[in-house]
Length: 232
Length: 176
Image (cartoon, rainbow over all chains, first blue to last red; front, side):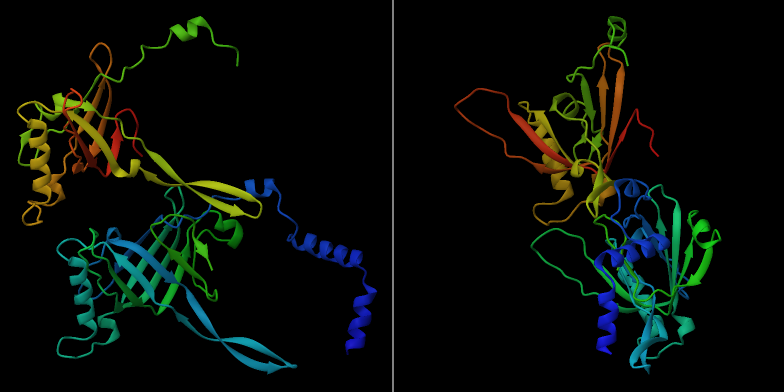
C-alpha cells in the first residue's frame, strides 16, 4: 500500500499540486489570501450588545420584561454523536439532539422582585410540601431577539421548555458598592430560530424561516462588554 | 474647493464665549431652591462630552473598526463653585450628599428618583439669548473634594464637586 501511495505522490510535482489546489479553490470560490477590497465588502459585524431577552409563557406568572436581563449566555440544539465502524474507519452519526442550559444575569431591583419571581417559578416545579408538578405547569419560554446596528431585528431564538434549574449564589461584601448579582441557569428543551434579516432571502430563498437549529456545538455568548457575536 | 474668501469669513456669526453660561440644578433634596446659591456661584462647568465606543475586529492582516455603544464621559463631571461667607455652596452640597447616604446610618432618605435632579446648562450669546441648552439626566453629587486652606496665598475658596449622571441631551441635536 505504501508503495502505491508513494508512487502517486512522487508523480505530482510541487507546481502541479499548487496548480491543482488553485483550480479547485477557484472552482469553489474559496482559498487565496483575502484582499483589502474583499474586507471592504463585508457587512457590519453582528453586535453582541444589541439584544433583548423576554421570559414568557410561565404558567401563573406574568412575562418578565427584557429590561431586567443584563447578561445572557445561550446555546442552540446540539447533536450527540455515535460511532459506527465502516470500511476500516469509525464514522460518526448523529443520535439525540439536546439543548444546553441558558444562563441569565438579572437587574435586581431593591425590592428583590427578581429573586421573588425566580422563587415563585421554582415553587411551580416543586412546592414547599415537596410535591412536584407536571411540566406543563412550570415550563416557560425565553424569547431572544438579536438586532443589527440600526436596531432592525435580524434573528429570534425561542428557547422552549425553560425552567430555573440552578440559581447562582449571591455574593455579598462590605468591601465595595455594587448591585446584587442575581443569576440563574435555565434548563431548555429546544431552541428554534427565526431569521428575519433581508439578506437571508438571497441566501436561503425565503425572507423568513423557522427551523430547529441543526448546528453542532454552536453557541452564542453575549455580555455587556461590547464586541461582536462570537460563534464558536 | 477654492480658497476661502473674505466674504465667506465675514458671513460667520459671532463666536461664542465660554464665560456666558448658567447651570440650574433647580430644587435639590433637603436644601431646596438653588437659584441663589449653586446657580450664581458656579465658577467652572463644562458641556459633557459624548463618545461612540468603537471596537476593532482583526481580520487576517487588516484591522476593521466599527462603532460600539454610546458613552457620556464615564457618566461623571466636575463642577466648581465659589464659596461665600454664608457657606451656602458647601451647605447645599453637604446636605444633598447626606440625603443620598446618611453618615450615621448609611441609608438613603429616598430612592434615586428623589435624590437625582435634571440640571440644565444654558449657554448664552453676547446679546443674552440662549445659544445652547444641555440637560443632564439623573444627576446627583457623588464626591465633594477637599477644600484647601492655606496661609501662603490669598485667594477665593473653591468648592469642587463631582456629579454623576446617566445621560445627556443636547438642545440642538435631534435624538433618535
